[in-house]
Image 1 (cartoon, rainbow, N blue to C red):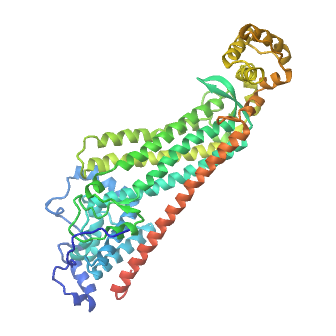
Image 2: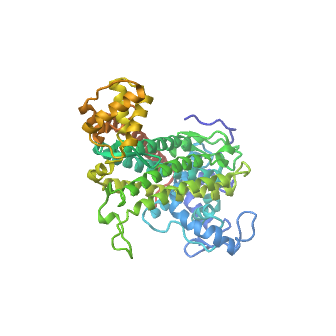
Length: 558
């Protein structure tokens, strides 16, 4: 990744001339930090924790208590869990870059990185990384204040050079989004393997195929499962492709206008595992289109799951009895003793549609909003992605559970096909393939047979009748082979003969499933490569942190 060209400026020393460079070489940094922690505009109490009566920047007062309660308090509690891990990495990558480009004194960078490592250790140990404060103006200010309390404003506030909350928040969202997308795709791949195994297992299990909710032709359960998985796969592949759109770094865009400092955006992107940078700074902070792409893919994935859930729940009802589950996966009624309800499919349908609501809300939240950084888009509209992801993950995991423990009743499926006339298309096909009738003549002949016999008798009985009908309709004399006619009337044979056109025969279904497994493996291969890339980026970042700290700290007391 090439370094982005920028206006070259001299390195910035946050001491602004108050401390000479030799103070760092002579070990004065530690004393300087301690002196700054006791001055620099902060009041030190309770072992170094500061209490601020003033506001932030030009603001002279803290936020209104109601405003704080509604906008900041609870959100900061969530951010400690959901945002802080990503913020720490982004912050470290930015500070390392500032040190490498000499925009920040390496000794100052080392102090900042030392505190960063301490916060990471506290967080990983499950301890309080950032203390609770009675008033603050959002999570970033809460985060930055911790550095200022520990190091003083001149050092603790030095990291915010050539960056803004705008590009930080945009980066946090993309880093978090790509992680969650990878997790969801991994769960999909597991579901795909489970469904593929079921498709193979039941590739020869005959079931009634339906059109317009009416019995149509004999099919196989494996064919149905393969069909569902095929549509799910397309949505998953779309979501997989969105990763490359997400995995671009906004860092360095600052507030959305860029910066005059000669930063190395490419280095930050590499440390964070991004494949590229977003070249336009306004695009970097204003765009959230990738959320719409993810929500769209999940919405379609969810729609398919709801259709799947409806069929399997219906087929498990007493009206059909094709499928079932053990007692630990069904419920009963509080009033009707006989009830045994496959209720989990209802949960699946309810959860699977959550992305649809998220998509509509996100699009509506973006509509007509000025194209720059705005809370309406970056926070409010973007916030719908997380419950949608959570619900979709749960829906996928529930489907995994039910398919893994699926019970199939082939006898019930075969019994349902009796007297449903589902093999009549096969009889018409026989007249075309073996006796030379045009399909429409064959169709009309079989239609007349059905009108005469709503319940089709055995082949030996209907053969002579059908021969007479063909003579009347097509003006052709045929002599039907009783064995061939019996095969056309048999549901299992009919399903097995559908070898072409993506049909339901076991051979065709097994080929379909094998292709789906290969597509799943392709997604898994990319998942593995992406995760390895992220791990390698993290290792490079940690090595860079260690190098800066080791070179600029006499003794690491962290």
